[in-house]
Length: 121
Image (tube, rainbow, N blue to C red; front, side, top):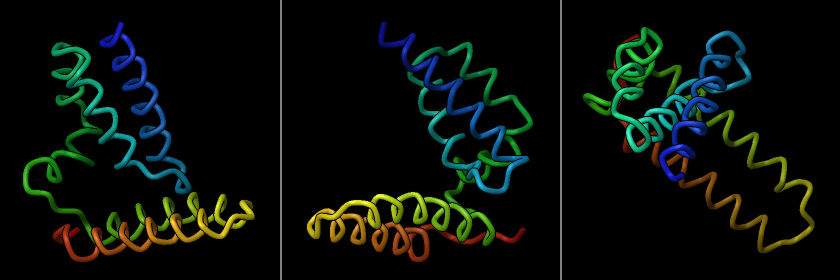
């Protein structure tokens, strides 16, 4: 049952990541990272298939190998995630929740700027 969940969730994340390739509003890399994690946990055969896909090689292989992202990825991923986190921050009328969400946004930006190395495009 657990492996089935990982496989289904992995394909869902893979589909969203593939849509992110053509739709600029969806971030590709985070969804593909989730798919990679799920496939690794769910099925060795599906994980091997995923690792051999061109989308994996283009968007994830370098990050998995040397933990680097292009400047475009380092800006694009946090921008989209920040917008997604700002929506509940604006809609929720609870000061504590707003502070927590803003701290998460700040920590995410810190991580992307200072902890992930930048590689040339």
